[in-house]
Image 1: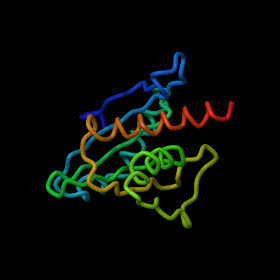
Image 2: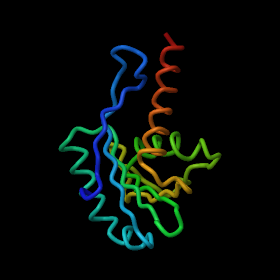
Image 3: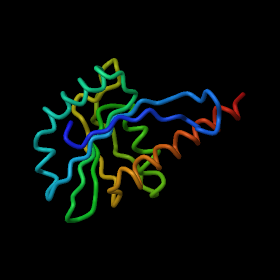
Length: 148
């Protein structure tokens, strides 16, 4: 989790003074086969949960990127991360999120078993992941402003 890992402190809308902030951690694992990483899902989930708690993060994502196929999948810990992944990565591509019919959550909103969600051909943290998340946060800021 720590090898290619970065923490971000993002503003909902940088053009608005005192805009609320979001603390986010993103770890990237480049693989030649997704099984190389997801076969260790249980241990990785524990590490991510500890990192999220230790650093008081709002969201944490582990993104596996298949460097041969140029596709990515995200390990999603709970409802908060799933909402972020769906709104930032899936909806802009016109893709529906995963069915949660058989998924249970605990009182804190974490899934009983972390989900792996395909996000298509997104592969770059700097050029795709962070800009898409920032765009989503900015849209939330506008929705809150319209309500007031």
